[in-house]
Image (cartoon, rainbow, N blue to C red; front, side, top):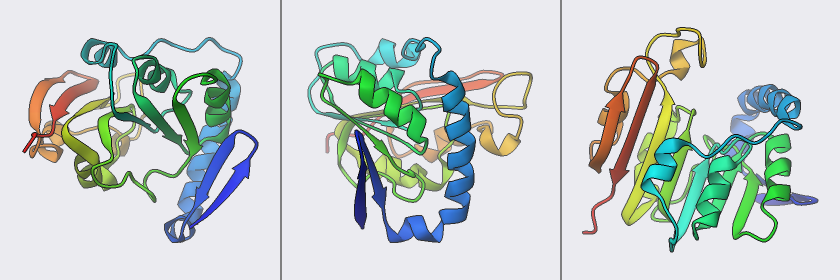
Length: 203
């Protein structure tokens, strides 16, 4: 693996990045354009589900996976977590790096599908609006004993909001099945959204 530093950014490269270079480049270009357009707009608040389940003070480590502009990562860090925030889009990570000054938060450009989190590394793992099917098992494994997985994303058939491609929307029961080895703390499926909180056992 090699590490390239670009100012405040940390860009990590590995053999898996090379194998998926074409797909990653397509996704990177799409999201780079999207977040460049949003750069001068106000940052939205952290997701309600995250605020409901995480309040200060907190100890331990947290990851905001596919963090986008980073409102949820900032919330986790302000609650006290030693926080990692990963996303493929450099403009989003650049914006977050500026906002994270003074916080225990490291924002990194990282293709999370090619390089998912390592085993037993996080006490809280948050995912919003990103259906990470290929790495569902790695998300479970990344939790430390007692750790929380907080997940909210698009579901069902497109009805005007979210991605139009059904491949990017969770099927009925999909997240429940993917995280069945964890203890369910909260779970709700609605017409267009699915939200859930799972916890890894202490044993």
